View 1 (spheres, rainbow, N blue to C red):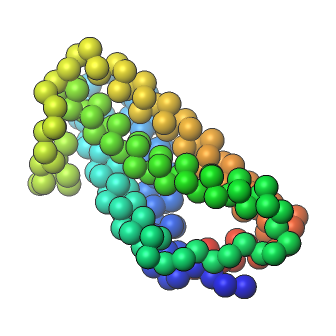
View 2 (cartoon, rainbow, N blue to C red):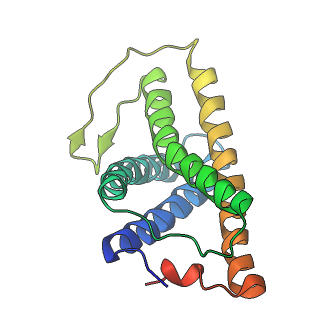
Length: 174
């Protein structure tokens, strides 16, 4: 069976690891009461992870646009191929939308994003207290959508591996 290219596999697993880390860190930091040095440090790390995911998602999209994905097995029903296609498009969209929504949420709160503590990102909007709760909610909803899509993606991969036994998962394994 045809496999994904090594750069595609590397980007897939690296982005997955960073998204899981950012999600876990996000859940942890919002549950720390008050404004503590630890909470501020976690917010910075969370933003750095988000910016890194966005940059790698750009690379991944460029790679994907210039390198064809392996074909699905001929026995795979058309509805499953279509569902996989739309789920992958949704995951790509979320890899962009979540970091961007978080970035604008930070800016609306009047908090600039300084990548790795040294590279200030452009301030594209002034603080906006009216927009802040909307962007916070959007960021949260997009993350919950990503969680659902991620779980569906993993369950589908496991179904193909252990029920269908069609080696689809092996195409993306290192």
